Length: 115
Image (cartoon, rainbow, N blue to C red; front, side, top):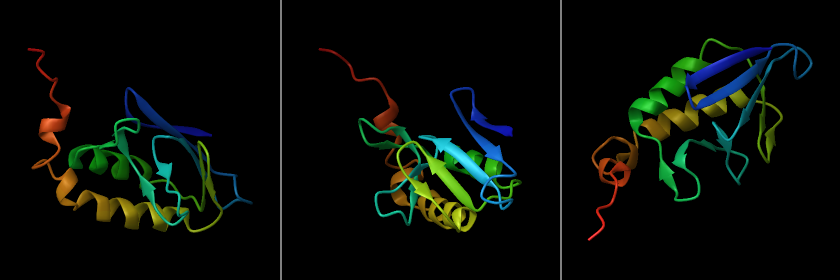
């Protein structure tokens, strides 16, 4: 089992022997499996529905890219097959979204001023 760290606050585990030798990621909420079981997402705050900025999405993709895996075990759901291609496709789409490219998310990360 290998630990894959994206930041000091976030990590996933890679289990090379998992999924009958096809490999598995244990992601918790670092890479969350979507309700549709056909997508994943990365959030700065799930409670407040704030996505990670594009640069963080790039770091997550770079961190998991070297590992071979087919299955993903998330905090609440699992993907039984095709996990790696699902992560790559979903996060690549996510990375190019206007909401995560920095134009719209910067103001969400600043602390609000109290009058």
